[in-house]
Length: 513
Length: 65
Image (cartoon, rainbow over all chains, first blue to last red; front, side):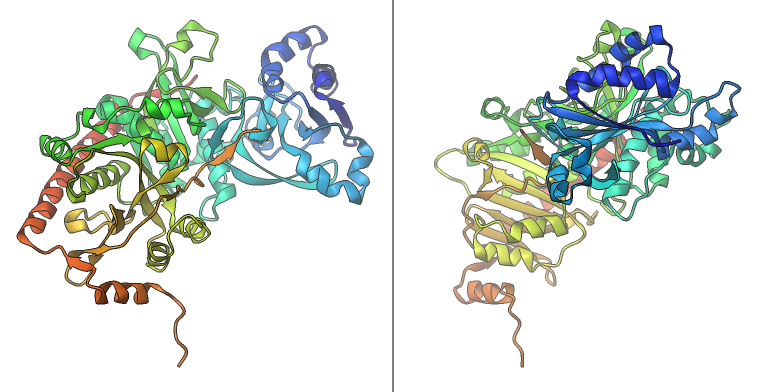
C-alpha cells in the first residue's frame, strides 16, 4: 500500500475526484457524477480559478479515524479507514517542485490549505483548513488560527478556520460546531485542547439518558456545558430576551475576535429546522454602510437622563456594532466562509424552509476570567462619554467601537502604532493591566472611514465591581486624560492631548486579494 | 544607581508640576459618579435577568440539522 499522489489544475478537479471516489472509496460509477455535483462541487466552486490541487491517498485523518474506531468499525458494513487529502496551491506546480530545495520557499508562499475526503458517502467532505486567500470574494476579516500540516513529504503551515461537513452519524451540526471551535482555540492558545468527536460524546455522557450515537443533535445548553468543561467561561444569549441589543452584542463579540456558536431555527413559521453554525468574522465595511449607521439616541435602553445630557451637550453617539454588514459563517451544510446578514443567516440555502431561518441564540466561548460583560462594558463607555464630555457650542459626533483585546496583543500593536501620541502611549504601555481589556475607541463617521479614532476608554475586563469607576484603566476624551487614583478612589483629570490615531484592528485577520 | 528608562512616572510628574491635574472630588463629581453607579447597577440587573431567561429559553432546543 503506497500513497498515490496526483497533481491537477482546478479545471480537472471533477475528473480527479470522481476517479478517486470510485477507486479509493468504491463509490458507484453511476452515482459518482451526482455525488460530485451535489456534495463536492460547491466546495470546489468557491476556490480561485488559479488553484492547483495535490491529492494524496491513504491519508490518516485524526478526526475521521476517531469516528471510525468509535463507531464505523462496529458496523457490519465495511468502512474504509483511510481518507484522501487534497491540498490547494496557487498556480501550476509539478511533482519535481516538491523535491527541489530552491522551490521550497515559493511552495510555502503558494500553499492555500487542504480538505479531506472521507469514506462516509454521501457526506465526503471532512476536516478542512482553507485559507480565505484561496477563495473568491474574500473581502472580509475573520478569526484564523495557524495549522501545521504536510503535503507530498514537505511541511507547511496555513492560517484559516476549521471546517467540516457533518457525517450525520457521529457528528451533526452541533458536534461539528463544537469540534471546529475547539480545533480553532486548541491550535491558537495553549490553555485549550482540540476535542475529537469521542471526547465531545464523553464530556456529555453523564447528561445523557439515552445512547449518544448515532447522534440526534445536542441541546443548546449542552453545547454551552461542553464549552464550559473545555475551559471556557461560557455565556449564552437569546434574541427573545436581549431583543434590540442581541445583534449588537453578537457583533461586539465578533469584533473582539471571539468565534461564536449560533442557533438558528424556523420555529416562527412552525418549521422543524434547528441548526448550529459558527460566526467568525464580517465583510469589509464600506463608507456607505458607515454613513447609514443610526444614532444611539434611538436605542431604547438609553435612559431619559442620558438623552437629556446628549441634547444639552450636543453629542450624537453611533454604535459601530449597529453598522449593517454581512457576517462570515462556518456552516457544515455549506462550503467554508459563507457570507450572510444576521437578519437572514440562511439566505444562501436553496430550500425555502431553510431560507426563513432566524438566529435565536448565540453562545460565547469566553476566557473564564473575563468577568465584565460586553453589555456592561458598552454601557460604561457610553455613560462615561456622555457624563464626562464637556459641553460645546457645535455638535459632536462619536462612533463608539467597543471590543475585547488581549493586553499582550493590544500593547504590542500600540507600541508600534506611530500615529499614537508618545505621551499617552507611554502611559498606557507602562500601566499594569489584566490579561484582557475592553477597549472603547471613540471615532466619528469621517475618521472611522480612514480607520482612525480621536478618543479612547480602556476598561479592566476582569473587574466585575462596577462601582465608583473600578473597571476604568484610563480614558482620553477631548484633550483630557481620566484615570483612577487608586488610594483615594477619586478620578483624576489631566490635560493631555490625543491626536487622531489608527484604530486597533488585529482581532480579526483582514483578507482581500 | 541605575535609573529606569520608563517614561510614565516622569510624564505624570510633569503634568502635576504644570498644574494640569485636577481631582474630580467635588460634590458635583461625586453625584455624577453616583448616577453612573445607579445606571450600571440597573444595566447589570437587567443583564442577569436576561442571561438567566436565555438559559431557560435554550433548555429545550435541540440542534440537529
